[in-house]
Image (tube, rainbow, N blue to C red):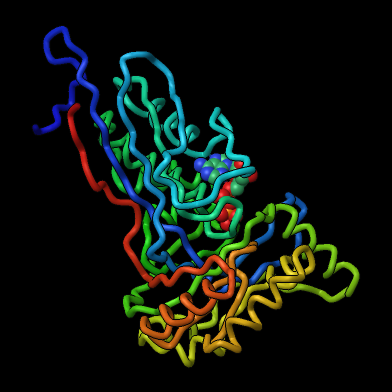
Length: 325
Ligand code: ATP
């Protein structure tokens, strides 16, 4: 049946479910400036959306309010992982913002299928927020433009606008200046997941501490290396492998020294280069092509790691179904 915009047909409430998927990201480059007096860091980063998706199913409910659950279809082992299901959840926050912006919001239940590792440095929570914005926008006919949605996304967190946008993009400032980069050629990666998370603020604090003890002046990052964008445009993994950079990597490795071994193993087993993804602890290994990526992922899996071949860029948040129940 075709979904109607009204939850009530006659007297009867008709629940509607809008299902959206949104990608996780790797930072192909991430330069971090000094700690600013306002407590933030300026960054310059190339974001790449990869083929590992969060899914949010938003179902309208007759009862008011927002509820959140994690779907049993999640492929992650979520035992012992702390994901708040109340107003601290990023998907909850996204629905609350959308309800404020919509004329006639209903109640909503959000079921999140988690595939992006939690506190993994791949922006999983941000993907949930982006997916929820789009789902509630459809559910409540908010009539917001893609640009207005992007503004709301930025209020929710630095990585949320990128998950909405997808593809390849350059992020500057405190993650508030995002411009799409027309780099559509595919690159292939193997993600190696850790069975623990790293807190992003802890990783930044550790980097500040390391830099303080070295007493070196850190410049404000103003732009990204054009070679990176060129290599992404040309689909040239060899060149790309020589210019990958992540200023947070040494801080993540300080907190979790075993990450160095994972990068070393990946590179010894055929990856062109390996790096910490964002604040870690997920490792992103760049492969020559998709066949090399799946061979490497199999080999690492065989050795007891949790590894997955992915590619990028992929599109940002998209509706995958919209049904009246
Ligand atoms: P980033 O790279 O953007 O810093 P991340 O991928 O490292 O993010 P997330 O998994 O997005 O980390 O979020 C980590 C923290 O946010 C956890 O402490 C978790 O409790 C909290 N959180 C809030 N909402 C969510 C959500 N929907 N999914 C996962 N974590 C969430």
